[in-house]
Image: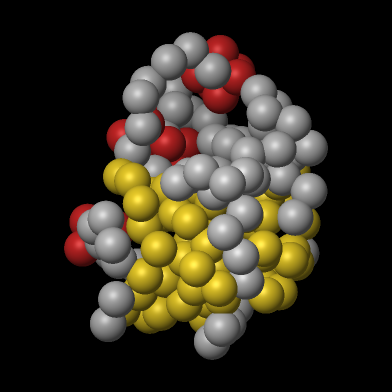
Length: 145
């Protein structure tokens, strides 16, 4: 079991946009984050990135990217993403449960790569479906197993 926390939560109303940070969100079972354009009834309802990856990318490329700039929903800290795999579960705030359904995704030109010249989700993103919904807030604990 690993323990971390929610560093940031970000959503966008439509696909193809950078996401904006919000302090809290309702997570809807088998759907995703309320008011997020990427929510739906598929296997990639919520996207997650490691906060360390954003910091390292900023250093490497001289960027100043923050929450949502890489189009992720959840920026998490304190977890070793290399130990997570398809089927791993993330429990947030003790009750919201996400199941990892995909590691990375197809890489294609996107608003992120056009804006910053680099993208993280294709190589480092975790994509999850919502097993159990609820409210999550910035700073909430995350347990991964």
